Structures are given as C-alpha cells and as structure tokens.
Length: 101
Picture (cartoon, helix red, strand yellow):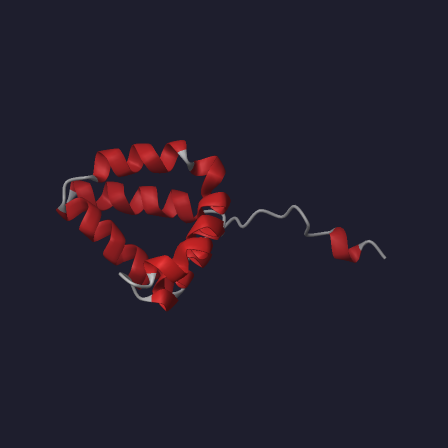
C-alpha cells in the first residue's frame, strides 16, 4: 500500500548524463572554457544550485522564443538535463576539468 511513496524523496546518487545530454553539456562547457568564462560560470552554477529545477522550468517556458536562435529539441533536452539532480555538480566538475587542461 505504501510502495508508491517509497521513492518520493529519493536522490539520484550516481548521476550520468545520456549520450545526447553529454554531447550538449560538453559543447556548452567547452564553449564556456574557450571564452574564458569558467570562473563566473562556476560561481553562477554554485549560487543557483538550489534553483536548478526552477531554471529548467524557465528554459522549458522560453523554448519557443529561444528556438528562433537555438534548436528547440536541444533546448528541451538541456532543460531536462538541468532538471535532474546531479546535473549542476556534473557541470561544475566538467568545467573545472576543462579549465585545468
């Protein structure tokens, strides 16, 4: 009877992006590092960590507008990536790795 609530507050421990999410996030991280914006991006990501789900929902909301500049399916995929727990940690780690290299 209580089986449906068993995973209501479960936290995704081993975050791993899908292949499509990995390609998008990798491209984003490489572009941030190429423009030498890794430090401001890391600060922004750390500050917005509690709001990552809200940011993902905003990205869903603005997808029709952003689709004039970016590919709409990629915007949706990035929003789904950001909506998952662990995505901000993954992005921060990847930015740090790329900026060290």
